[in-house]
Image (tube, rainbow, N blue to C red; front, top):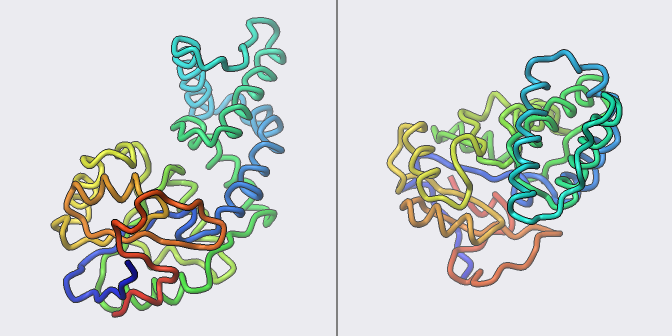
Length: 250
């Protein structure tokens, strides 16, 4: 079903990024490609960073879990420091290829992208309706949050460096998977509590029905966002559908 939303009963809006605010191709073809290309030089330049060391240790633990689960990940070397680094990079690329929602991978990617945004190599692509809608919603007094599998750092960088300018002053909250999985209703309950709103007063927009199912179970209002390049969703007719943020009237 297709419905136009009124914000009369909505006090907050929670947005996904990939396929909702930003084209999927930008994430997969530009951001993921940049991380893959620059991961080795980044790790070599930041080998003494405590945060990077922690990410790599977490990746090693995830690799051990993958082995236990018979996921057949590429093996990690126990040889020279260079060999260990190269094998970790192979594993990182293996995770990227599978679009794994890995917390240490997302944390590391955010740090790599920070370098790219900082030197001007990266510029975020957002759908043209996003910036005007954020401005309208904030002007109407709505609380705006972002919930993405990308790290909070990566989220802030993306909205700070868009082709429409810095949009971070329009966003109140950022949530990543440290809040909980995007398919767990408790994640949405925690988000609503942090936004200081009843779940029923928050509208969550996602391109994935399984995420909407979780948010709906937490009693959030929900809508499926269909954008160019998004994957077709089974049971899409269970939810209101929007193609543009312009359909959410203020």
